[in-house]
Structures are given as C-alpha cells and as structure tokens.
Image 1: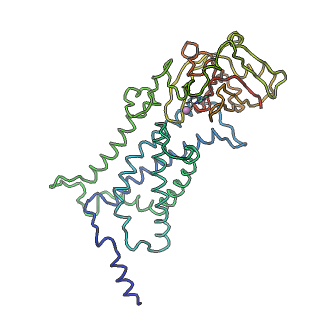
Image 2 (image 1 turned 180 degrees about the horizontal axis):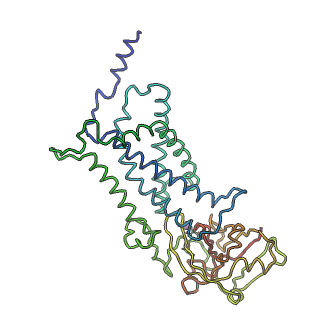
Image 3 (image 1 turned 90 degrees about the horizontal axis):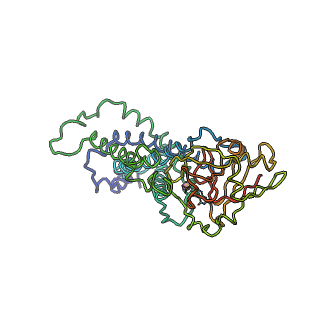
Length: 392
Ligand SMILES: Nc1nc2c(c(=O)[nH]1)N[C@H]1C(S)=C(S)[C@@H](COP(=O)(O)O)O[C@H]1N2
Ligand SMILES: [Mo]
C-alpha cells in the first residue's frame, strides 16, 4: 500500500462525509467564551472543595483556624454556587464543541494526541462532578459509591485534565475572545431567517447560569432566601428557625436523650475526669455566640446559641494546654456521631456545648440536651446530642 492509497482510505472513513453540522453556533469563539467561564468556575469550585476536604480530614501538620467565624460558610456557599452555575455552561459547551469530536484525522501529532486524550477525563469528570454534586445537595444517593470519596477523587482527575486542556487550548481561546469580530464579520448581523446569533446564544447560556445561581444562592446567602426556589432547603425552615439534616428519630437518639439520665463526661488526657448532669451544666457560666450552621450540602443559616464554653470544661478537668478534644454523640452509629476540635477551636471563646438555640431550649432535632457549635466549622463537624468529650 502506498501513501496515496492510505490517504484515500482515510478520507473514506472521515465521518464528516456523512454528518454535517449546520448551526453557526458550533464556533470556536463561542467555545472559547464558554471554556474560559468554565475554567474559572471549575477552578474556584475545586479550590473550595479541597478546603472543605482538608478541614474534615486534616493532615497532621495542619489545623484549620477558628476565625473568621463565617469563612467556611462563604467557601462552601461559593463551592455549591459555582458548581450549580457550571451546569448550564458545561451543557452548552458540550453542544457547541460536539462537531469537534468528529474531527478527522482523529490524531494529528503528539500535541494533538495529548489534547484529545484529555477530553474523556475532562468531559466525563466534569459531568460526574456536577451530577454527583447536584444529587448530594438533594440527598439523592442513586449511585452505589460513597459520595465524598468519589467526588473528591474525581475532582483531581477533572482538574488534571483541565490543566492539560488549558495548556493545549488556552492560547487559542485567548486569541478568539480578544478578536473584536468574527473573521467573517457576520456574527451579529441581523438574521433574516430568525435564527439565534452567537451573541444571543451566549446571553441565553449565561442568563440561565445566572438564574440558576439567583434561585439557589439564597440557601446560604439569606437575603435571597425568599427566591431560593431551586434550593432543596430554605435556611429558615425547620424547628427553631433552622433546617435539620439528621433528625433525632433518624439518628435513633429519642430514648437516650432522656434529660434525667443524661450525663456529660469529660475525660481522656485530664487530671480529673468530670461528670455533669444537665442541671449542673445549666448552672455553669453560660456564654452566647451568633454562629452559622454551614452544611456541606450547601445550605447555611446563622443562629444564636447559648451554652458552656468547651475551654472552660477542659480547664475544670485539668486538660493540658494545646490539647485537642474528641466530641462524641449519643448517636450509636453513623459517620457523623463524633468530631474533633483542634487546638484553635478548643481555645476559641465561642466554641460551645450549646444548651439553647434562638432563646429556647435546644429542640431534640438540633441536639438536645447538648450540642457542639463552634466558629468556622463545617456543619457536619457540629456534633449533636453530645454526651462525652475526650481530651486527646
Ligand atoms: N450526632 C450527629 N450530629 C450531627 C449530624 C449527625 O448526623 N449526627 N449531622 C451534622 C450535619 S451534616 C449538619 S449540617 C448539622 C445540622 O445541624 P442542625 O440539624 O441543628 O441544623 O448537624 C451535624 N451534627
Ligand atoms: Mo451537613
């Protein structure tokens, strides 16, 4: 076989002989604008996601600070908002670049190969991240794997592929957007056939993305709480004006939380282990703090808490300076029945074992008789129905 024959055979295989993409919207410039927007939203989403992961699984050399008190609330709100805003952007981008998947010849040199090889992990990873994220904020676990581990692992695959993709296409994208008009000069000319202009299409996509954000951001940005139509939970709806993630019934603590039998134990690396009844806890100096619950599922809401300072209890028991504390729930099983306070959170004057919420005795679904609340912590680490504090 000679070269001419191979070329001939290749031409016959070219899918573009059989499919044609007529829309003017399948265009490099549209792909570039959407690509840049996605590059930004995915990067912000990745960084805020890694922050959340590091707080929950801290490496030994790192301890997340307790201040600013509402910082985690912001990072998590931004994480979920950028993820949701990316959904219309990614779907639009896939539609715009769809004809490129039929590019012929499929591989055209090493650089081209690398660029094309990064597409399956980029597209697959992007769709996976957004689909599992949306399912998680709706507590819809239709998949057989553990959400946090899979979502976290895939984020590295996706961001790695994104870096390769930006390396390959970043220059082209920049050139496309810095060009003042399309090369044919007709992009935004009046359409006599009534079809969409490229600019009109982009307005539509960004408008959709903006509306998705507007109608969901209120789940953590409470001034927009009234229009959080797309949010699975409203920040004000729930007992004592606060949503509930796991009810007492679901956690199986209704019997155990009987106030007369309740004891709080402070033990572990202390001089003298202590035990308190609920009345004894109430007679200790009480402290008030306004702090948010910031759920990793995207909702957050500020509330007024009142209770005993963790550092006071540790001092009474004679815990060493700089110690950490593991806080344990009456809830027998589950993944969220304990959390650890690092030295910053132990020392913070606003880290409380709360007995009251918004001026009332804690509702059982919020952790009665006693729950942990501290500044700048993910909701999942604000353990409810606390009965034991182990100094470690
Ligand atoms: N023991 C226990 N504490 C828990 C949970 C749990 O399932 N069990 N869920 C956590 C999660 S995910 C969140 S967001 C907050 C919610 O607190 P709230 O129900 O008081 O709003 O509690 C946390 N504390
Ligand atoms: Mo949560």
